[in-house]
Length: 305
Image 1 (cartoon, one colour):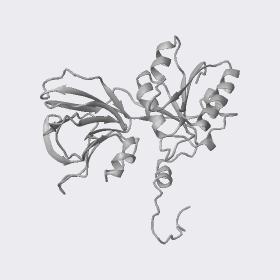
Image 2: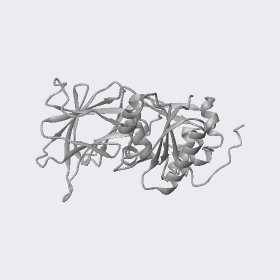
Image 3: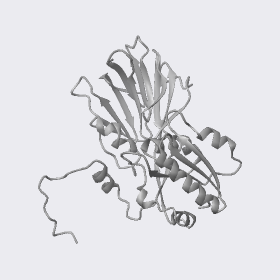
Image 4: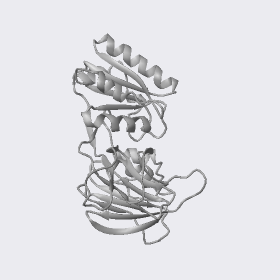
């Protein structure tokens, strides 16, 4: 990997993340690399300015923060196929990020320059709002991207709303859901909101779409996993208050009006994350991040070599 031009993003409002970023800037500039530095947070999005201001390709994005900072980077950089090195500095769970212990800035630049790392590609979703039935393919909204999930649910400041959503998959009506909403997730997002809603955990090496009802009022409403080439169409029914919202990775995308539907499908490109750990294991990550306890009484396995 060439290190001629690099984006460095730190978590907005986090002093530790900013200090790490400044240290990285010094090390990369010492190697003759041009660095674009900025904060990322709910009120800060440096990516459009960075991408519009460069004349040469960006070789790498170093993201210092938690999963939310990494998700924002993926949504903004996937289309330009910029690899992301996300490090958990100032974050919490850190499913998508490298451990700070594996990010030794004295040696990591040599590893990157010598291609001593792995690249993990993760499927993303894209969504757009349309008018009327599925024969109308002209979107009336922007295209929205998500690495974890798209979520359709109501949002009201003064009362708890039960949503009524109708879903089609590839033109076939599947069901009407009455409850708190629907989650349409990638394998990456299966360990986020989806697993909290009792949905399935899917290995990120797969390409699939998981659809999970949120607190449905019917015991027969169950999660479903569908092929990645499917198109999920969702209508909001009985919503006189115009309170139905489309959320992308927990960030508000847009509102849905009566008579509109949202089409969700696999995005045209995926997110690229750099893995530094030589002993990386997704199952170990599950065990550690979800704190799986296993059996209450632990037995030794003398059969494992």
